[in-house]
Length: 146
Image 1 (spheres, rainbow, N blue to C red):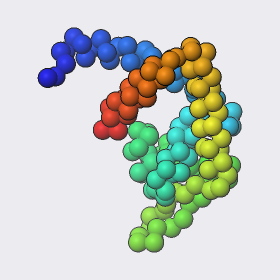
Image 2 (tube, rainbow, N blue to C red; image 1 turned 90 degrees about the horizontal axis):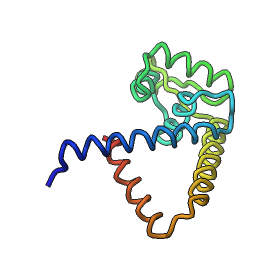
Image 3 (cartoon, rainbow, N blue to C red; image 1 turned 180 degrees about the vertical axis):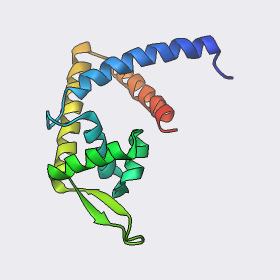
């Protein structure tokens, strides 16, 4: 049985407010203070999925290709990504993450997980409540991974 429109709307409002505030707090924890959220997202995507074209990265981050070119140029200047010719189409360029880029992603994830664990610790959740939060996070992933 599907949820009612009213229930969906109330849930959407509650989730939006909670996730927005949580995301804002988590974004403050990063390994490189001068790096933008989009730059970190590009590095995380490359770490997770491997080489990508600029157009693929732009589509994933929902920015224009020229904007992504600028982002990749900046990351390349900092030594976090490199460009390589595509083996199948020599006209196409692939972007790949460097070891330094991986280190930034890993450290940012560590800091954000540590921050969130501390926030959860302060609330003093029970094991059952933590299980509920893990189950809710799985449900939320289904929404964003569509």
